[in-house]
Image (cartoon, rainbow, N blue to C red; front, side, top):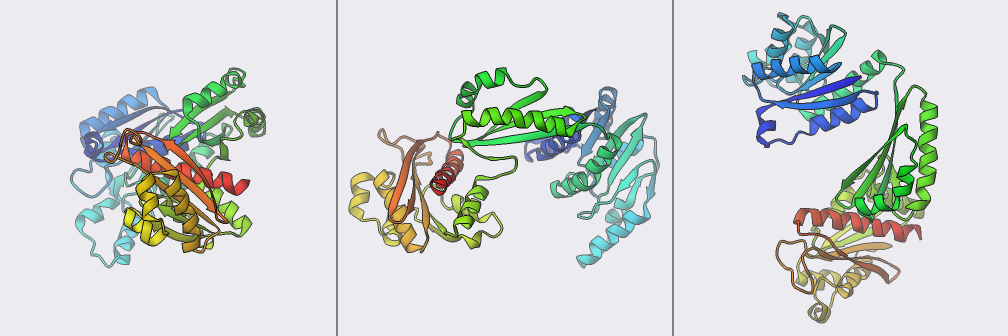
Length: 412
């Protein structure tokens, strides 16, 4: 089965809003065996929506629309669908009840515009929206399917995951998609591909391989489509068994694992604690660690010593060391990590000091120079990294590299 996703909104065309909905929908369709062949973005215009819908139905089995289902005058998706399917708008009693309860819970009055959210095309099957006032809609059209969902991401995601995907799986039972993602860190996409050239050449032709690079991490996704789930899983597992020995030092997890989650599991297993001492990342590493529920069981806190004065006052780094070697140096970052353990009463401390940019660089220490250290028991392991010239990317890559180093220390 092939699908087209149509995302609707002037804000998407202008670039004000990033179109994250399309990526989320496409990735979820894939696990049902439905391939997204096209993604179209149109503005808040009835004629544009109707034309896009007609074009999509001429080429694809399933069309999914998001956006334009709200109560304001620029929300015209529902009117466009009613016109395209030649369907009158009627008040749906269940939707009206849902809308009334939505506003009642918030001690807000129900306006006429909000009441009109319960006006839906008579030919549509209604999908309730527990997190908003705009319901989803499902149309069966000449053996093809048209689905409309609100554009608010958390509303759309709930409807898609708990309503749309299960219905599509029931409709198209028999098609099975098996995926396995191998997560790597510490090597770039092109270098990884070079190492795996022979393995890729011999890869089972029923498996599709995709490299998914991001700042500091490269994921490899293996996908197989067919009717026998157990068989598909077995051929993917066989390929991963061949893959792992080739890049074992770079693999840190699979599927939805995160580096911070892997480190958390190791710390919990060891019953040991962690702190962070950050300079150029300004707390981003701490943010990633504390993004996990239960991080208080192993994470004691952070010292964000952005200035040299605070490195001296809070982390007991002698001014003479900073003056001699500079704040971005092996000597300083190792002391940050070692003294951070003491200051925060932790078993481990990860320290980062670098030049995120755009200023502060020199010939000896160019933009993107970052030192990272991991300390335990008064000893530190450190490494120098040379990232790029983009500040935010440097911050993210520094945190990822720090977590990678922490993992390596924890598993030794």
